[in-house]
Image 1: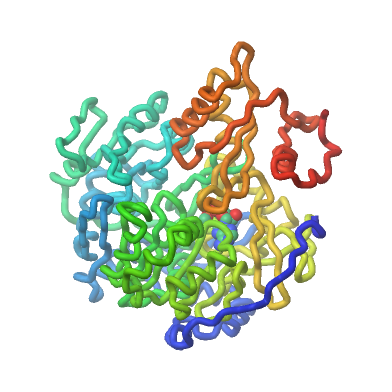
Image 2: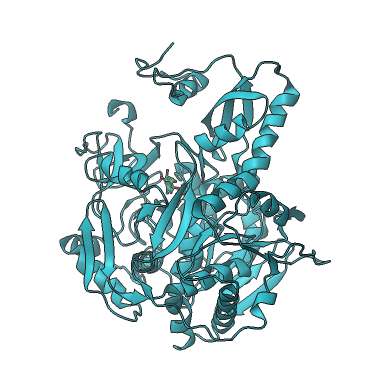
Length: 629
Ligand code: WTA
């Protein structure tokens, strides 16, 4: 594979305004990085010392390949660090969150208010019988209550499993069942582009045949208020009413699970990535501070939804553990017009802005006049995550939004890693198309299939060579799948991404090595879409590939074999697209469906998606020796 990915590396670099680096937390990346290599445990221990623990650790790290424990036997609660620590140390009346709704509604919540709401909702959950170790599924729109629900779970030691509100009933059902969720917290509806999208009815569908679910908590935001019917349904605010105001945080062991978050894989259902309390807290706190360079007076806006890891780590746990002010919003980037996000940056003085390449590319298409209408001078740091930030998008973001002053941090990481792993440190030279170098404390390499490093300029597999605090601990209910991450290539963690490194150690990500599609920055497993297609009565077999799309990264194309008695028609193709949309949600909807008579398969019966893709894109199909026919 090495030859195939050889690239011409462009070495032109960009330097932001020097004042950003002079005032940054990290100051000297090279020095901090090389020191972290000498003694990684000391590096992470120093970070942990900045946070509050009920009891300190016996050991910083224990490694028994592929299992790591961080801060062993330490006792803590992440919400103590996200709430109590601030409320009792001078940030009581500081704004924790500013929320802007799809319809322009606003809410401002201080640390004190958030603390009180979380404690009451924690007690509300307890009154429903939720105990430490139970799983709670959160399927909500992007409203403050979504974060209150997450923090309340963490406070009482329940494991939250947040499912993105844009997923459909089938995707929700499988996630509820896999995690054996005892409670589902939802809302009547979410709002998108002025339209109401019913969530509750999807939950009703999703809990059929999920006998684990004992209660459904419903946030009723619409008027007239929807009625709650069955006995298992309770109102979000009612459960906060007749309970104690105070709720002491549950004493958690550093290695107790904090949450499960599903991410799509190549085969089979989505994987429930399990993160634990102590290491995750240290990793997200460290990177929020040292990668995003968050300061006391910043207003941070991460445009992700808490339904994704980016939202978990850089809306909720990282920024709140630092006592920051976050902006959260239900708005879509182009509604009511493509200036809405820039108007919010001006209005709320946003200084750290973290978004996805797909949004940046959309704005590029809309034209510079939209950001040009607003004063963006509050911005200091720009970030990007989710897929490669192509050089054109980098340059546009840097020039038009950052006015050639702000660093543009292209951060590479994964649901599995919990925190940023690669980026260009604030103030270091930035190279368009490259994410950058490893975060201090993180050891990465680009290797061939045997685990041997490849020379600079040659493509290979991206691996992480040593454990880090916020690494996933297992795949829920499938530890074998977890072990595969650490055994596929040598004894390293194999990220599943292809990468190339230049002479300066900067890394460029070249896409996935497997069949995971990245659509608008979201991971979509080809297997999940295929299984949704096959659940349609007309479909016998299906294969799904990603086609490069200038806006979305990948767009989904499906190849389908029909059952006997069904004939190809435009209507059927549309039906199939909508069938996937209904089952999995709009992000997973194929933009093209082609009806075929056969699919290329290996002798062992696996569909060769690679071949379909090569054919579709007119590329060389590579090695076809395993092809059956
Ligand atoms: C891709 C999102 C290139 C990559 C935090 C990774 C990226 C997958 C970048 C994880 C980036 C994420 N440049 N590719 N800066 N960031 N990816 O789990 O393929 O939703 O493996 O986590 O997204 O996606 P996930």
